[in-house]
Figure (cartoon, rainbow, N blue to C red):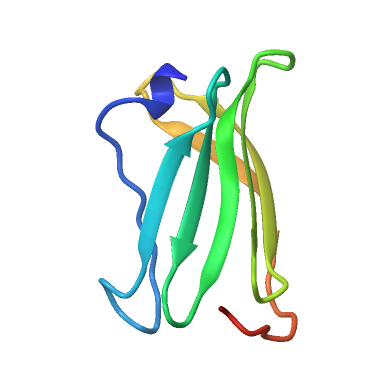
Length: 98
């Protein structure tokens, strides 16, 4: 969990530009997992980012309201950077975001 605590950033790009969505991170009590939720007028998605002690790997999973999903596994590099590698699928029909 130490790699997820402290000063860190997440960068995204969007055709809507900066400042059009909010992302909230909450720690799940008793775990090494953060729940994330991203919302805007054009987008809604959520997921989890954490560390699985059973396998000794970081993980990230997410899904959105547009039939998108992603999953990745990661390791902490010597530089302190968390490196995640995985796959994502986006391209399903858009659903109403309420």
